[in-house]
Structure formats: C-alpha cells, structure tokens
Length: 218
Image (cartoon, rainbow, N blue to C red; front, side):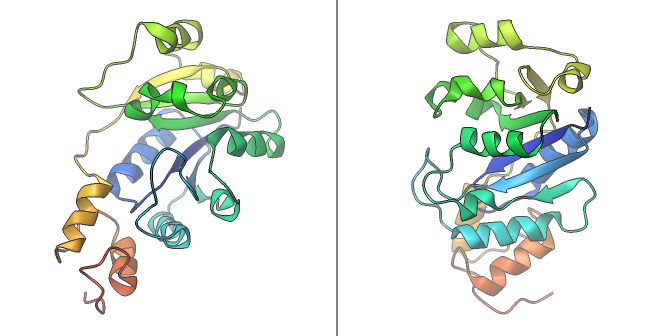
C-alpha cells in the first residue's frame, strides 16, 4: 500500500532531531513520503516564539531537495486550534484507501488522552510512536489497553490496512531541543550543526529568536 507518514509539530525551530526521526521512519517503515505539517495554533502549549509563516518557511528550507520529504501548510492556513484529528480527517478525504501513519514522540503519546477527539485518531490513521532511550511504553490504563488492542511490531501491518494500528519504533537519540536552540540563539550563540544551514540562514536573516538578527555570514 502507498503509505504516507504524517509528521506534525510546532517546529519552533525545526532541527536535526526532527529530521533524523522523519528520515529513519521514512526508510524503516517504508513510507513513500513523510509529510511535515507545521502547527498553526498549537492547542497544547502557549504562543509559539516564531510566527506560523516563519516556522513554515523554516520547515520548507529544511526539507528542500530531500527525496520523500514534503510539506503541507494546511494548519498554518486554517483558523482556530490546530487539532490533529481535523488534519487527519482532511488527509483521509484526500487520500482514500491510502495508509496514513501519524508520527509522534513517546512524550506526546503519553499525553494522548488529553488530545481533542483522541479516540477517533485510529479510525483515520495508524499511530507511529518514535521511541527513544529512557521512555517506556505504558502497559496499564487507557493507553496500555490501547496498545494491547491495536499494537503491532510488524511493519507490514502498517501497509496492509489504512489505519487502526499502533507501532512503536526506536529512533536514534539526538540530544537536541528547540527550547535549547532558542535559548542559545537569544544568547547570541550560533546554532550551526544543530540544524540545516538553510534554517540557520533564515533565522539569521529574520531574527526569529533574537540574538542573531544580523546579516548572514558564511
């Protein structure tokens, strides 16, 4: 089945931790593509630090030229909170019969029951959980029951059906966080080697996070 990974987030800013996770999912789970969807108005956190159009531009710069990576701006264009279920409903309507895999981190998965209409997610897509050392999948409560009922270790199961399974997949641990990058930039330090140069250049030109609002050099 022609499977697509759906990778949402604030990407404030996008960095190599995001990109490496998406790339490993693309290859290991045999997605035809991974669709990055920057969140316009995140319902689970306060205001973003960079504006929605800036975060979208940084994501577009980060994935430019990478086979299998695409960008979707629907949440930036859409008014109101950016609920994943709304995005998945739209993608499902546009991709009938196609396997969709919602990629989220284990930390986000542990808070899944707080998401808007979270019980509807598996009727629209698979849930692919990026697992890193130090995080443990729940084996009790609502999430434990959800994994017991829908969990699978077989990549083939993500291709044999268009939705309905939970797959937990280990990814390379990169100790990079958007928060630390913002703090670093605000302090006047250079985020080189934490993100693609195209993203770094955008930040330097536009001063999204303060501290480096200067003309780009090198």
